[in-house]
Length: 422
Ligand code: C2E
Ligand code: CA
Ligand code: CA
Image 1 (cartoon, rainbow, N blue to C red):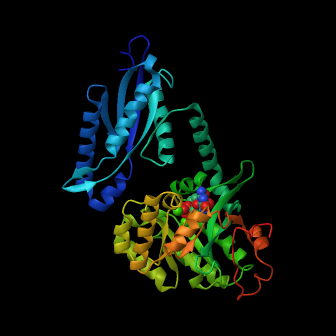
Image 2 (cartoon, rainbow, N blue to C red):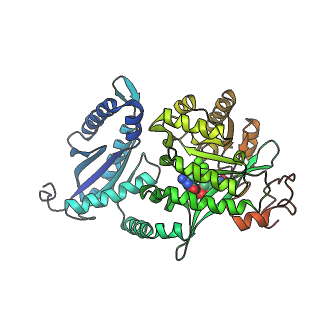
Image 3 (cartoon, rainbow, N blue to C red):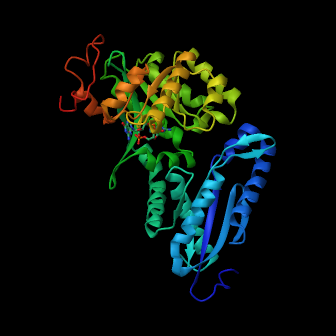
């Protein structure tokens, strides 16, 4: 209706809004708090908007704002507005006396540029919202024509993924985790890559969430791990392996049965396996997660809490669940060389690890200054391009010092000087 009423030369912005982490709020605080939060969000959106447009809830945690604007001022006016909404929504909310911080991701489609029907504008806003989420949430994006191309690419990958898994196109790359006291390699993190026949080597960002949505993540993990076990035959026995496990996979007993069977068959001791769990995997049922993790640990498997710090309730989980290790997310680590505040933060996180008798790994070490700080803070392990980028199985083998493969006592020391060419 608003489209039909647009004055000559007028424009309209359709802003689609999704609350970040709303599901987590429901899971952690319960649905009553979730409902109150939605009301508070609607109220604040209405107040921010004042008389500039109309806001409606589309369902779930999705809201839409329709706002007319003068074409002459173009995107600036909408941009300023979107900025204000995103920052307003990042302020804490109070629901049932609880202080809750969420943010929003917003996609914007404009009429007439991106279409002149409600359907076309909502589609454009939806595509743009998807990009806002990918950009790390808590932000907004305008629709751009190439976004459609990216979505089309994803639709194509979706059709191909099942066969790629069955056909062995998903392969393990490995990145060493370095013991910062000895500088020896402690483990290799397994990072999935898709050797796509026409698109080249694809990184997990392109296909892991696709696999999760298509319920193919477990076949993918198993296909990957099968190759890891084969590669492990050619590695010194003391190297450990760190495997990433997705949110939904933790309660899948069959997955762990299959993993441990493969390890037995390949003669890999359970103590050589480390499982890296991202926080969201634990939230739905913390007690169940704690039980499963206890079970894995009782088998000798190490369990690490991945991406520590960026999840919604890291400390809550550390209190509820016994981990062996936390991996501090690289977004915290990367600036500690020049940003004292970031450095204090990471030092405090490592301190939490020490107090709880947890080992700590810092991800994303790219330079010597960062490494020096981490050593000063007594971080246990380090990982990052400064030591080595993720490498294919054959490249890892080629880069090992001569003799290391067959000598279980020989430790491999990695330094930036020990490159692939070494
Ligand atoms: P992650 O677990 O946080 O893995 C570390 C990521 O940081 C890797 O990205 C790695 O290449 C990158 N990285 C390591 N050192 C540095 C550095 O010094 N600087 C920078 N800028 N980046 C660095 P990658 O390989 O693209 O993997 C992305 C994410 O995909 C992983 O993040 C992990 O969450 C997920 N993933 C990878 N393989 C699997 C898998 O087999 N299963 C599941 N469920 N997730 C996986
Ligand atoms: Ca990881
Ligand atoms: Ca991480």
